[in-house]
Image (cartoon, rainbow, N blue to C red; front, side, top):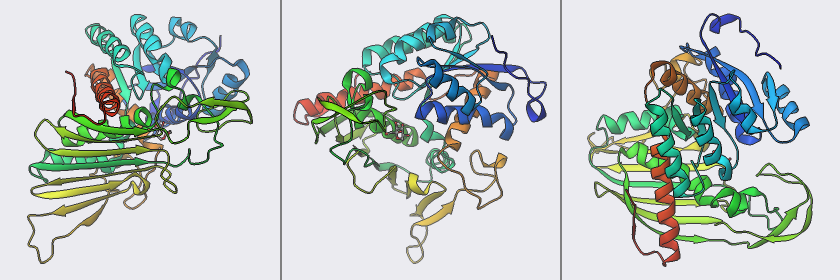
Length: 402
Ligand code: SOE
């Protein structure tokens, strides 16, 4: 069995945190980047070790291990979980396997990081949250990977809302727009199959914006009214394995069983109103997560495609010179940025995964509850379920279950 390499340099001498990752496609690559980089940028209390990566195809997982820097490979996640040289299991598989892997990993005494959405159904998410709660009493941690909380600009927005810079919140407006399904010939990958992905744009993109909206507002949604649509119901069947966003040539056609777009309004517990739009059909929009919060004292606006910027309108300033102004979120006093580059030298998408690892490693070392927890992931799952229920009932207002 291959042994993880010893580290020299900034991480030397620290207690290792040995990671086993399940999955190696898009999210596996993004998480690997986080595990590889965090200890070299931040002064972490423990040293992440990329111990084992797991995937079903032996040659593909070997190639992923070489590319992303993992010391060993497994082809069965049960074997990965059974290893005593793994402290934390990072789940980067499609949603249909999250619950089984997470519950088994927690039962085996591991900490767990699980990609979003936490699960494909509320029932699965409940089981996971219960397992996480029980594991927490044994000193194990479980976190769900809503990485957009960890963009420095969104973390700054959270800080400003918590400081009261917006006053009483009235509106939260969020859209998450992509366009990779506009082409009718795009094949029926796992992300378009309900039994694998749980839902479509809703679980993939809607989960992010529900979590982010609630996190920034500092409160939860009480209920939603929704419409959803599947614009293209038949798609070519891929001939061979796919990675979700791309696929090889086709053999015949199959039925899309998830939503292509989900639009919903919501009411926060405080009475603030929210609107959400999640779609993969916004031609020309690649990864446009945009949000705006309006409060009595001011507003904040953010666009993931310009993620080093946060826009702030301070309504307490005299109207003669008040107005939205751009905060360039690259100062050492901004969240996460004291470890990175000099002011003006911005960050990108991948850094959110580095920050995720940073926060998780601190939580593990300190024994504190990491956020977002599985309980938070479960609550988002309940919002998604309420959206689907409302859409089925012609947009009837649907309360979110506790
Ligand atoms: C694909 O739609 C996707 O990769 C999502 O699955 C991610 O969660 C999001 O961050 C980017 O888009």
